[in-house]
Length: 292
Ligand SMILES: *Cc1c(COP(=O)(O)O)cnc(C)c1O
Figure 1: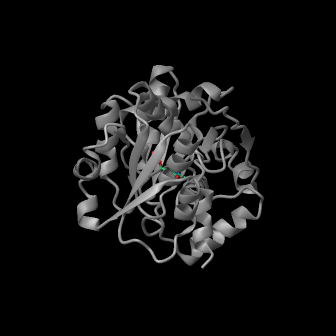
Figure 2: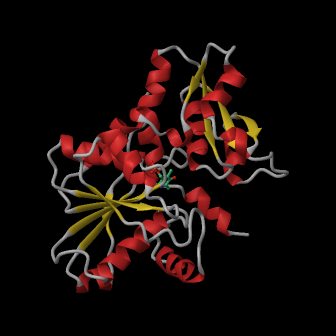
Figure 3: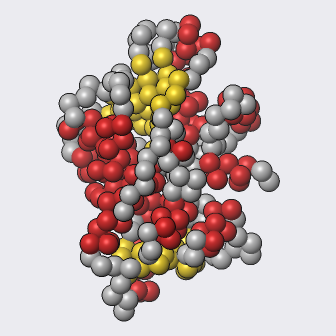
């Protein structure tokens, strides 16, 4: 199972960055695939390979109704010949949103479950699929140990070394994979995460549980803009100005990450001559949710 990866690194020109004498680049993982976008292919790659090696033909995963993971999962499942089921938190909506509509196009089956029941994913899997010997459990967000090596591989595509890498964090597994990869490759690059959830201090331990205590990374907790999928007028204005430059960011993940880099630059967080790589982790279908 392979997707050929097209994810160039592009400079981001801005007066602020010139003033501060820093260079900012963006790795365009959003270009990897229109729907298996950004970090999601990297996270799924070895999970799908594991399912295939076990002769499993039916992949089951979990998410909220706006999950970028479920869309990538449905699309990747279809592309590589798996049947897919999405177990979705909350009641069945009267009208499918953009993500679920696209999941359905890729042939995904839906199971909608109440918020309480949704918490115990192993139990749900057991309940619905214990008699399906072809069923294979994929955690919410595609997270877990098998998500790490695919994310680390991003580093092998870089032709330069950077002082910092920045990316948005949901579960933190993409960051964990990249941080572990940086250690394995002896890179001095500081890996910086921008949690998009409010009060996401648990991420520190979640990430350490995956990769151990010795791996240096920094989480910047003050850039969630109010919480998961929350926005505010100042942030939205910043985002629409940024998007007018022709590089689209979504409001849930990549916009918050980029706004953080601008704010940190403004506050002289970076030494002059620093080279900073941001990662476009995709998720652009989510932007359509702003059009209400
Ligand atoms: C899923 C997602 C993330 C978060 O990835 P984690 O590995 O859960 O931290 C970041 N950006 C975008 C666009 C995403 O869709």
